[in-house]
Amino acid sequence: FPSNKVLNEAMAAFSAMQVAQRKLWLHLAFVRRGFAAVGQKFPEVEVDMGYPPLKVRMAERLSGKKTIVIGVPGAFTPTCSNQHVPGYLAQQAALKAKGIDEVLVCSVNDGAVMDAWAKDQKVQGSMITFLADTEGMMAKSLDLVLDSPQIRQRLGGPRLKRFAMLVEEGVITQMVVAEGDVPASATFADAMLEKC
Image (cartoon, rainbow, N blue to C red):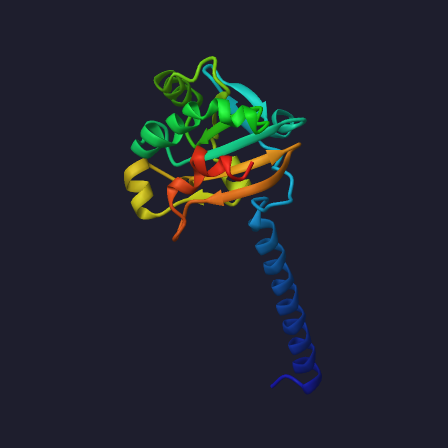
């Protein structure tokens, strides 16, 4: 049998290991939380625009502007195509009157899909720009990944939750995420106009 001294040393080492694991877990939980909070800077991530895709650095794109960033689960999906984007197109004059410089529509899709969807929605020449979060890095950094077996079955993989953010000078000043008892309409143009 091991001596008391050996047992005490083993217990102390085990206890220190538990403390280190707890600290690591707390650190990872904090890091995983991401940036999706009012008052924080929008994360420095790159997304794609158009096809062939041009890299867009979100921090630079949002700098010096008052922008609405919306996230949608997928291009060409019914709610996104029939209500979400058309609502922002219809409210451009009111958005501009509130000082909005641009509306960025983001989705976990590739640049070619987002480009085709932009053409379908007839956003060329408008204040709306479609951006592709091709690898889902923006969704992850905002901690707004939409994932479930149902989502994977319908859309093929993890997507971006439906949200709308008002971003001023690169800082999130208003944010709405459509989940739980918050309806999709809370992220639509009419609702965001009240927050501008």
